[in-house]
Length: 92
Image (cartoon, rainbow, N blue to C red):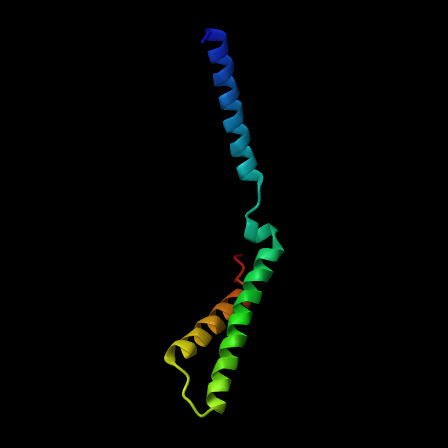
Protein backbone atom coordinates (compact mmCIF):
# COMPACT_ATOMS: atom_id res chain seq x y z
CA UNK A 1 0.00 0.00 0.00
CA UNK A 2 1.26 3.44 -0.79
CA UNK A 3 2.09 6.00 1.86
CA UNK A 4 -0.78 8.22 0.74
CA UNK A 5 -3.31 5.39 1.10
CA UNK A 6 -1.98 4.56 4.55
CA UNK A 7 -2.32 8.17 5.68
CA UNK A 8 -5.86 8.40 4.28
CA UNK A 9 -6.77 5.16 6.04
CA UNK A 10 -5.28 6.40 9.32
CA UNK A 11 -7.13 9.72 8.99
CA UNK A 12 -10.43 7.98 8.23
CA UNK A 13 -10.00 5.63 11.17
CA UNK A 14 -9.31 8.53 13.53
CA UNK A 15 -12.30 10.55 12.27
CA UNK A 16 -14.65 7.56 12.60
CA UNK A 17 -13.47 6.84 16.15
CA UNK A 18 -13.95 10.48 17.16
CA UNK A 19 -17.43 10.63 15.62
CA UNK A 20 -18.50 7.38 17.25
CA UNK A 21 -17.25 8.58 20.64
CA UNK A 22 -19.13 11.89 20.23
CA UNK A 23 -22.30 10.06 19.15
CA UNK A 24 -22.14 7.76 22.17
CA UNK A 25 -21.64 10.70 24.54
CA UNK A 26 -24.54 12.68 23.08
CA UNK A 27 -27.02 9.77 22.99
CA UNK A 28 -29.20 9.61 26.13
CA UNK A 29 -29.55 6.33 27.99
CA UNK A 30 -32.45 4.19 26.69
CA UNK A 31 -34.20 4.09 30.06
CA UNK A 32 -34.15 7.91 30.22
CA UNK A 33 -35.31 8.59 26.67
CA UNK A 34 -37.60 5.66 25.78
CA UNK A 35 -40.77 5.51 27.88
CA UNK A 36 -41.94 2.29 26.22
CA UNK A 37 -39.19 0.21 27.82
CA UNK A 38 -40.33 1.36 31.26
CA UNK A 39 -43.99 0.71 30.42
CA UNK A 40 -43.24 -2.81 29.14
CA UNK A 41 -41.30 -3.68 32.28
CA UNK A 42 -44.06 -2.38 34.57
CA UNK A 43 -46.71 -4.20 32.53
CA UNK A 44 -44.75 -7.47 32.60
CA UNK A 45 -44.20 -7.38 36.35
CA UNK A 46 -47.87 -6.45 36.84
CA UNK A 47 -49.01 -9.41 34.74
CA UNK A 48 -46.79 -11.77 36.75
CA UNK A 49 -48.22 -10.33 39.97
CA UNK A 50 -51.84 -10.66 38.83
CA UNK A 51 -51.43 -14.22 37.55
CA UNK A 52 -49.66 -15.28 40.74
CA UNK A 53 -52.33 -13.73 42.96
CA UNK A 54 -55.03 -15.41 40.85
CA UNK A 55 -53.24 -18.73 41.33
CA UNK A 56 -53.11 -18.27 45.10
CA UNK A 57 -56.80 -17.35 45.21
CA UNK A 58 -57.70 -20.35 43.04
CA UNK A 59 -55.74 -22.72 45.25
CA UNK A 60 -57.27 -21.19 48.37
CA UNK A 61 -60.79 -21.68 47.00
CA UNK A 62 -59.95 -25.34 46.43
CA UNK A 63 -58.81 -25.50 50.06
CA UNK A 64 -55.21 -26.23 49.07
CA UNK A 65 -52.25 -24.35 50.42
CA UNK A 66 -50.28 -22.42 47.79
CA UNK A 67 -46.70 -23.55 47.21
CA UNK A 68 -43.95 -21.47 48.77
CA UNK A 69 -42.61 -20.68 45.31
CA UNK A 70 -45.88 -19.00 44.35
CA UNK A 71 -45.90 -16.91 47.53
CA UNK A 72 -42.27 -15.93 46.89
CA UNK A 73 -43.15 -14.97 43.33
CA UNK A 74 -45.93 -12.68 44.53
CA UNK A 75 -43.60 -11.10 47.08
CA UNK A 76 -40.85 -10.55 44.51
CA UNK A 77 -43.24 -9.13 41.90
CA UNK A 78 -44.83 -6.81 44.43
CA UNK A 79 -41.43 -5.62 45.65
CA UNK A 80 -40.21 -5.11 42.09
CA UNK A 81 -43.30 -3.18 41.12
CA UNK A 82 -42.99 -1.01 44.21
CA UNK A 83 -39.35 -0.32 43.39
CA UNK A 84 -40.24 0.66 39.84
CA UNK A 85 -43.11 2.97 40.78
CA UNK A 86 -41.63 4.77 43.78
CA UNK A 87 -39.90 7.98 42.65
CA UNK A 88 -36.18 8.22 43.19
CA UNK A 89 -34.97 10.81 45.70
CA UNK A 90 -33.69 14.00 44.13
CA UNK A 91 -30.26 15.28 45.03
CA UNK A 92 -29.94 18.90 46.00
